[in-house]
Amino acid sequence: MKQIKIIILGITCLAILSCGGKTAEVIKEAPVEIAPEIVEEEPLTPCTTLSQLSASDRDQAETAFVLYRDFVKANDFAQAFPLWKTAYNLAPGANGRIQYHYDDGIKIYTDLFKNTSDKELKQSYVDTVMMIYDKRAECFGDEATIKGRKAFDYYYNFYEYSNADQTFNLFKEAVQSKGKNADYFVINPFSKLLHDRVIEEKISKEEGAQLAVTLESAIQNGLATCGNKCEAWNIIADYAPNRIESLEGVDDFYDCDYYSNKYYTQFQENPTDCEVIELAYRRMLRGKCDPNDARLVEVKAAKDKHCYKPPPPPGPLKQAFDKYSTGDYKGAVELFDKFIAKTDDVEKKAKYTMVVAKIYYGDIKNFAASRKYARQAAQLKGNWGEPYILIGKLYASSGPLCGPGRGWDSQVVTWPAIDKFQYAKKIDPSVAGEANKWINTYSQYMPSREDIFQRGIKEGSSFKVGCWINETTTVRVK
Image 1: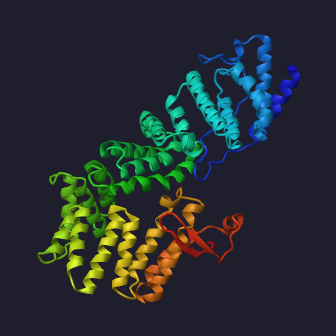
Image 2 (image 1 turned 180 degrees about the horizontal axis):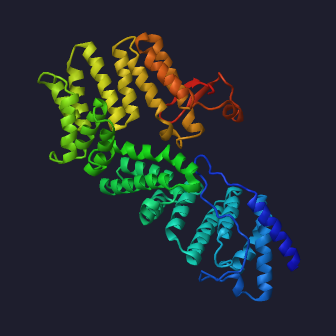
Image 3 (image 1 turned 45 degrees about the vertical axis):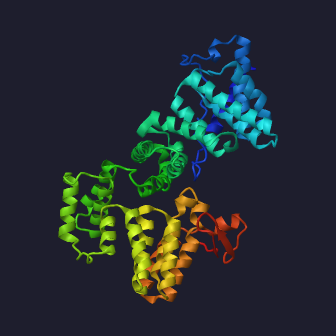
């Protein structure tokens, strides 16, 4: 028997070494430990290990460890299950170091969960998965990572068997415990939950801002030290920072340090660019930076030197621009709306309706409101391409809103975006140059021919893009 085990073990190890892992594009799989050879080592766990078993039990456990792995790799979970239970029950501490049997048990019970419609059974399988996580924490520690993985499974696999508060709090505890070293797989789902809870006012702005800043530091640290996980961190960089930045549209959310660290740095890199200077100035005032803050003083001096514009005459418009220049975006919108409602000048109505649309897009980060105002502006002034350019940019920027930042759901938003760019230049040749620039930019992000083929969709057919866009478009390939 021992020789047979050695032969099987050798084959198993060779198979493991020949397999390479690949991070799922949307990071919907938490990491699993690659199974090393089971060798006897000094136990580093309080749980029962192979070396602590009787000879017969050890022989049974080692055989079970070796054999169940082959079935798991073949996705034959029915055959793996009894063997895995034997290995897990006899030696939850394995050789005192390896932990992959916990990943395998969770994989087996998740498969059982997915293959039954019995709600009571489903609940019992979820409970068992969580018990396996608890046992792993008991045997090998690292409670922060375990909490993150529990939350991850609740979010992606067992969302009907958890409540939002429980999942959010598990993610929060995992992130707070690890800080800038937070595990990569928690970043995207937690950034989504955090964003939604702030918008829905389910947590305080103070707590939300602290967590958002922690997430941002984790992303920066992860990208800088990603090692063999750079692909995963690059996927994260396409999604989570957008969710964090969109919270800049919430009044009194981020403080002076946040805005200064972000926008003063951009100013230093482009000290004469008026667009950058004015953005940094507005954002730092929005963060209520002290007027005597040396960074704000420097930005204001650059603004006065490079970006002077004659102020509008006294009145509602000047008041609106004054509000806007200090970062009071909602106050500015209210004053622009009052002016738009009172003026009889249709050209001015269109112009300042478009100004409000841009504030909702670039500053408040409310895409639906931005589109509403852009459509109103287009109705006020015929054959005007600018509103459709903006709507196209809104759609093209919606990848992280409508999907994970990459992949199908985030790519299909390019189709209605390109529709708008094409329509803009059709009705208004003066915007053709800008429209073509955006068409060329976003065409490369459309789904591939393979993507549409796999979904049984034909190029040139109609396709309804959902999310907040909710428009029918034409299928194209890059």
